[in-house]
Picture (cartoon, rainbow, N blue to C red):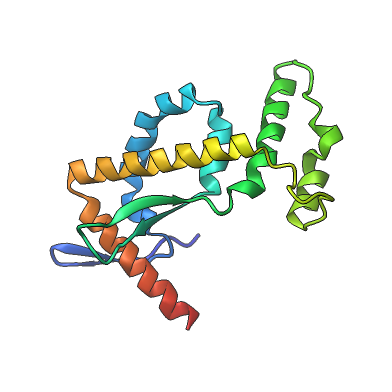
Amino acid sequence: MSRPRHAETAGSRTYSMSNWTDSIIGERMTVDQQFSDRIQASQFTNSEWGLIMTATELEIENADDPETATIVANTDNLATIIPELDEIRSQTAAMAGQPSSGSESSGGGLLGSLKRALGFSGNDDSGVDQEKLAAAESLTQEYAETLQQHLVSNGTFERARQAYLDSQQSSSQQSS
């Protein structure tokens, strides 16, 4: 099993990794625990939130400027998983012995997922619930802001910003 490569130098860390958030995994776990109350108050279950965060990329805008650098949630991929949220809810209800919400008739399940992924959904909006998408986008941005506040208060934002810059430089070198 391969592990992320970390090269350490005297007094500071230099990260050579594909994802800068690996450098702040402990801080993210802390923020995840703190943010769990916010998830509970939202329309999303923990399972749904996990899928939402899997489809969300955390980025740092203006990373080259320490004064204006800001963690943001890139939610470009969220629309593709929004229909799956209904499937998660349906599966959870079925395990609890509750009747299904009928997502099978609207193209749910594995076959429906594959069709949507391949672009064969048959309709232009791919069944994306726009209100749910907006709520997920808002919540992920709130998470990004909470993470940044946590990193700033712990004095680790500069390290995260530098790891982001390093990962961006590394990925641009790999693609050229």
